[in-house]
Image 1 (cartoon, helix red, strand yellow):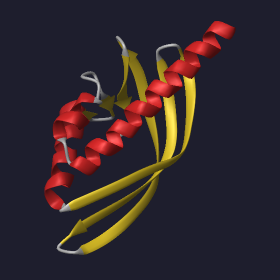
Image 2: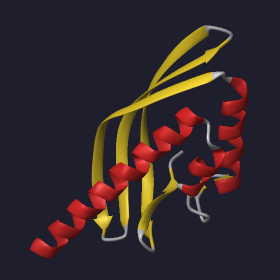
Image 3: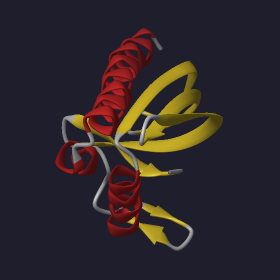
Image 4: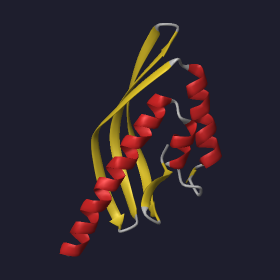
Length: 123
């Protein structure tokens, strides 16, 4: 049981790093960095990885500036290679000096792929 707790602590740290990297990629409007965090086998309803990336490209094209802050992050490990994260985020988007703030709660599915955690559902 102690070994599983240690794996979960390490996994939790890696998941936090991946989700923080997602926020950074969104703020930098970096499609490559964002795409790198989404699993090739991503599936959520009818949306696959290409659809998620296309939606994000549309968001990047629509706004001059995007700021995002994730908070109230809760992780639940289903096993050593699968986890769920429920978190809130505050996104501020701006175009032509007009900004709008969006606050939402999201539930993300993550899976360990080799040595890193990727988003496999929930976007």
